[in-house]
Length: 134
Image 1 (cartoon, one colour):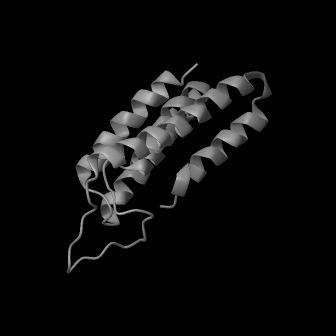
Image 2 (cartoon, one colour):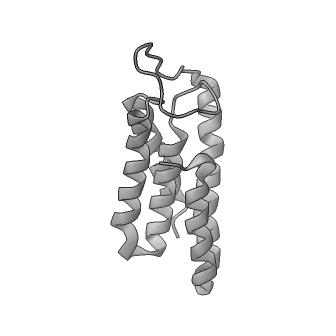
């Protein structure tokens, strides 16, 4: 699944901004939580400096922007968005969280993250997304 730089989530957030004028400020806040998650994730990667999985007989299926793995930015931004956006669109809570889970799990399948990278990313994103809920 694609999702580089949380583009999918910003796209969904923009749809919310345009279609839900009454709660535009809350949509901005939810999108801000995704951005803050990106910043925190980048800082955490710089501190932990864990290398991505590297298996000679099983190369990664996608290219990645850095060699750093922990925590997964795809996982953290996906769960931040799912938490923040689901407060504004409760009927979409399950699909949003399902999409976040698929995005996170795809990173292990693609060979670019360890399961612990996505688990910690999901916890980080959920915590920041909860803070961004209105």
